[in-house]
Image (tube, rainbow, N blue to C red):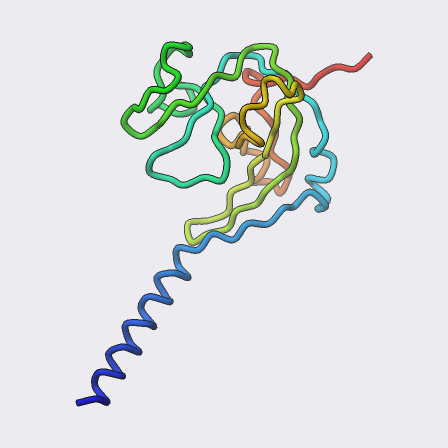
Amino acid sequence: MFKWAIAAAGIVLLVLFIRWQRQTLKTAYVNGLAPYSSLPGKVYIFERNCYIFKLKGKATDFPLVGDHDVVPALPDNVSAANVGADLPGVRILDIARVGDRFEIASVRRDTGRTGTRITFEIFYLNDAERKFPRLDAYYIMDHRPEARGEAPTLLTQYAAPEVVE
């Protein structure tokens, strides 16, 4: 009888280990790889108001940035009245405003069972606006270049590079 209990416990541990491995997300910072090496340190300006939010069904390291056009669960119009709102699927934390300056801190590659995601970790340049150490720009990025092995970019309707004269 004792042999069966040990065998059953072993099977349970094996199933738990396999399940854990399948759900594991491997994160790598790819700042030094050729397509991404020029991105960290670039400064951009928000071209439209966006929400800073967290998705309820998906754990992320940092709050995300976006609006209703890229995340349909967010309200149509970006409004300060929605800050703190606990909506189905999202929790709104703050607003990124037109003209706010931010820098790409690093390029992160998350690899999991469902595939690979490239995202930019960004931060505000103005310390007074920096309520969060970093933000995740995944939803305001153009991921189409990734299919060609190139680095993604920020969508121009959301952010424009700062022009230094």
